[in-house]
Image 1 (cartoon, rainbow, N blue to C red):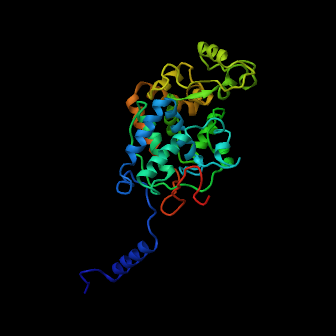
Image 2: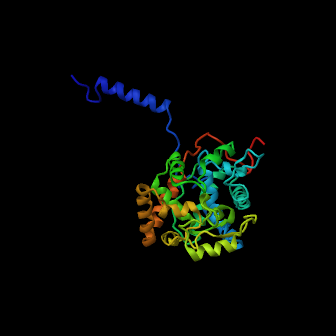
Image 3: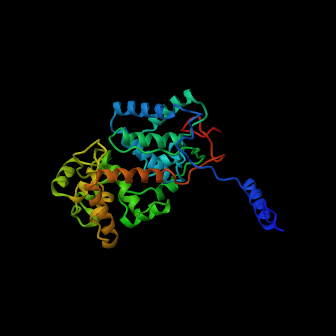
Length: 335
């Protein structure tokens, strides 16, 4: 007669499942309330520090957002871009050298957080929250930042040079770099909308102004009046350090104006304009449609941007007992 509590096979299965569940613990997951008891004032602290930094320099919002982006593309979102070190550190990689900025703001946030809850919050989480607040305080969308990341122990210049998308990359190369970290073509277009705020140095777009791709002519996709303005701003044989806004006529406001510009040949970087003007008909039909869609639907762009940022923030995080919680975002604890 069958036992009412369980059959022999069922009991064996349940016992095996219990043993396995104990022997193989679940990998910890990022959650938006990770510090709700250990550091309940975290979000207010970060928000206030980002706000103060933006009052001193509005441009810092774009810089903090970019730091998070460049961090996540190298070994995942582990705060490795924040590490000082010799010339092998990510700070010396071509995409970051004399370009990545905002480290002092992260230091200040970390110090404030440490005074409230010492040894609890990772630098990687601080950077992720600061990036969100930079967008929000610039007029962009809110999203819940999942937390629980731990800080990496290694900064990898070589990987940074290979993994971080460049303004000079072809569309296929950029797509490949996004795919390598689990982000798709839609994510690429959506996250490129971050260029609605921020500035770029002449060195990152002067290749379009005089001798584009060895043609001895400017980039034909660049709008004429903008071309003349940029040629005057960035004359040949200068040091390339002069800066200008990425999103003309909408400098510091996070909105969908960036996508409007692309439709009129006013994307500053080559990697921006190819989303609308690339010769790759099959791929560009997708990116072009998204550019047009976002240019007419700011609400949808905001929703998709928030989703894509949350997705990017989940790239290979260190969790549980991996990595460490750095006391100083610039050095590993053993130093």
